[in-house]
Image 1: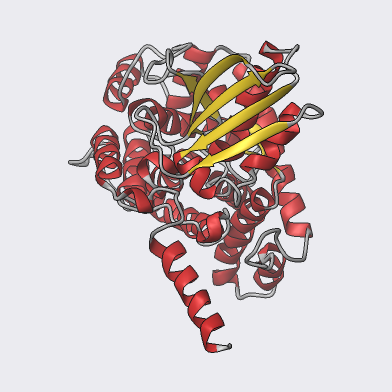
Image 2: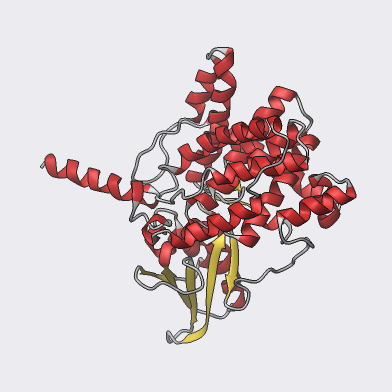
Length: 409
């Protein structure tokens, strides 16, 4: 597995695969051809299907500015190595191609090309499954966050401090803002309202309503193109911060305790990224919100005193009970059902941690088993349910809107 720095990325929303990844690729291609007069970009697969709603064209034009870039939306060609594919071309004054490169945005803001896709780069973790990590840490009598430090080095805590500070800043902004999110849905921001209701709720409801408000705040900031931390993606960025903030408030933990929980959570996100996928275009939302729930469940279980095996059990449940979850963004926007899913996955993460803590830590299905299942489920899933906005809620919502418009004529 790569460093957790490749999992927790700080950048602009609304999509790690559709904005952060393409922006990174466009910046690199622009630097490679400083003498180009103009550029052309072809978007394939999911990038073409939902790129406009995800602001893919905007972020690419911004990367090449002030030089012009022609963007072509290829809705029919499916590139064989990954559904999120881009082709960049650098053009001279006469319009001749100076250079060309195909890249793949594989999720979480990570970019691969034809040489590196499917390969692990900068592999700093020596173990390749959660079973191996649990066995190693058991032998060494080591906690999971200590294993992260052993592999990453002590400097990783400074990076995680920045990650946690950014998560908190995102929540703060999201809780303060009002109004309507950008895009065709005219969706109202709800985090501030939920926080107000939480403060005026009975004690037994207050904590859960706070949790919802925190998750909504991050997800709404992401939907508006604000700065977020991928955990593991932009579209699922609200789950881990929400549960960490709630548990910190309840237990009055220091930031260092939360940061150690983020380190442990990263192992489960990184393992999903290495052995399965965190790309909605490849495996559906089970790879985004499902993995985020697993990460949050692991973090919560550690914060509440769980040992390594109970932590792994909590993570396994968090993902297992999201298996088959489709990625069906209405109008191609990271809003419906994405924002609401963050809040509900945060709630489920707490349940999974509690359940695991009550157990003896021994479960028949491992996290590795669930990752393999998730990947196969994603491959078997109809492509219309993998971030194309052609199936599921996206399809039926569109049909309903067209029907209403027809009735009103």
